[in-house]
Amino acid sequence: IWPLWFSAFAFRHTRQFTSLFLLGLIADTLMA
Image (tube, rainbow, N blue to C red):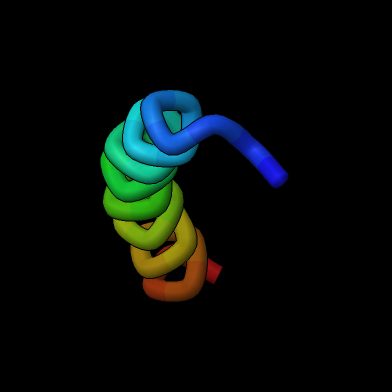
């Protein structure tokens, strides 16, 4: 089980990364 602070830290960064990843995925789909 991960520490709570680590989970919050990872969740915040994952959410930021996920939005960028989705934007890249959508752009890649549109260009394909």
